[in-house]
Image (cartoon, rainbow, N blue to C red; front, side, top):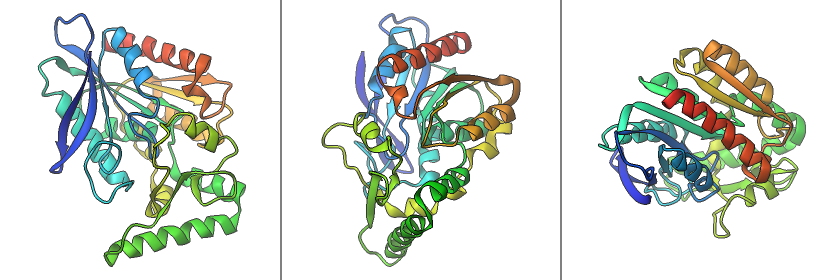
Length: 296
């Protein structure tokens, strides 16, 4: 069973899908999910949730504030601080539900939210386990990679757009938007050769490919790896070995920092391949094996 459900964060309503396993009995373990950079629950997350539901888990898939069906103005504002608040609000919410065992809460993140689940697990008590798929663990390393691949001029243009948006926000102007994903050389958050087609394959046709440009000033200082040593639960780190979007060596270092509680799975694929076809089947199979062991 899947139903639409709402909860609040800082007085704003957040929209989510709630999946309950067909066999109802004792309070169920719950997997809390949200997408990566600019993504919403409609961008390829339902197949994961359905697999988890069939395996006997409850699932909450939510939209961040400012995105999708959740409230928040301006639209398409990606605030790292607010998104972490959203994760913590979602965890607090599912713990209030009579159908859910509050001691068996797992977090599932992908790409940008792969870092979010590390930060949330470091801040929240009693998280049972986390799964981070092709995770972005260090914005500083990602920014340096973008500088090398896109060049200094393009990086300066990105900073200029970010400043235009941030200064405009300070003086009350409308947000200045840039693309979430675009072809190489364009002004977009992701411009690797596989990014445009890979991202577009996940999202519905009417998906707004835009984000407030000020996020370009924040990403470089966002470093989930710094929280890794505070993670006190089992963690599955799934690394795409041909990932052109996030630096995989940082994911390896994050797993090392978490220590014996971390499990690493590696796949000989690109960043966006893991959401599709046989690569999806393998990744979700590994996630299910992990969740069964740590949420039983």
